[in-house]
Length: 291
Ligand SMILES: Nc1nc2c(ncn2[C@@H]2O[C@H](COP(=O)(O)OP(=O)(O)OP(=O)(O)O)[C@@H](O)[C@H]2O)c(=O)[nH]1
Ligand SMILES: [Mg+2]
Image 1 (cartoon, rainbow, N blue to C red):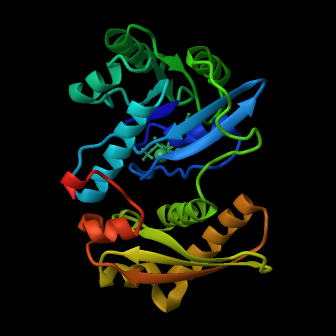
Image 2 (image 1 turned 30 degrees about the vertical axis):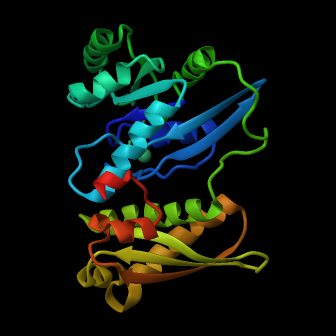
C-alpha cells in the first residue's frame, strides 16, 4: 500500500506509527520526504508493505519532478492507496488532475483524515463530506501522534490487500539500505537546525560506512547549492556543523543501536536541484524526457 497526499499531511508520521519505529524522517515543514520509503510490517499472518511517498506538489525544479514522479509511481504500483489529508487544514485538498488519478480503477482508495487530535469537529465534518463527494466514503479519522484510529485503518488495509505469499522475510523492516536511512537522518537534523531554504538545498550522501569499526565510522557528504549556504551550514567557528553532527549522530545511533563516529563534510554542488547529472549522482531518478 502507499501513503499518498499533499506535503505535510503526516504520511511519514503514519508510516512510523504503523511500524512502531522511526523509519521515515518527519519535520513540521512541507516537502521533507523526497523519495519513496518502504516499511514492512509482518504480524498475525499478514504482511503489509507500506510505501511512504513525497507530498504531491506543483513542480518548479527537477528535484521536485523526481519527487512527484516517485509519488505517482507508488500510486500506480500498489494494491491499496491511503490518501492522507491534514484534518486541521481544510483547504488542503489536491487539484482535480491528482484526484482523478487517485480515483482511477487500478487500486482502491482509503481516504484518511489525519491529525484529528488538532482538528475541530467542524473541520472534520467539512472534510468528511468532501471525501464522500470525491471517493464515496467518509475519511477515516486517525492521528499519527496519539495512535487514534490506526488499528481500524490497519484492518481496512488488510481487508483490501490481495492474497499473496510474503514478499519479504518476516523480520525485515525495510528493503532500503542503511546508507539511505543514515543520509535521511542527517537531512532530518538539518530540517531541525536550519531555517528558510537551507534544508531544501541540502542533499546527503554516505561516502563511507566502515563495517566492524567501533565506534562505527560513517563519512557523509552534505551537498549545498551555493558557497554562501556552505558558510551558513558550517556556521561561525564551525558551530553549525558541530551541532548538526551531534544531532544527526544521536539519531543514527538510535536507529542502528550502536555507537557512531559521524564525519560530515560540506560540499558545494552548484544548482544540484536543477541539474540532471548532479541529481543522478545523488541517487534521484525520473523519466528521461524530463531530464
Ligand atoms: N498533532 C499532530 N501532528 C501530526 C500528526 N501527524 C503528523 N503530524 C505533524 O505534522 C508534521 C508533518 O508530518 P510528516 O509526517 O513529516 O508529513 P508528510 O506528509 O510526510 O510531509 P512531506 O514528507 O513533506 O510530504 C510534523 O510536524 C508531524 O509531527 C498528527 O496526527 N497529529
Ligand atoms: Mg514525509
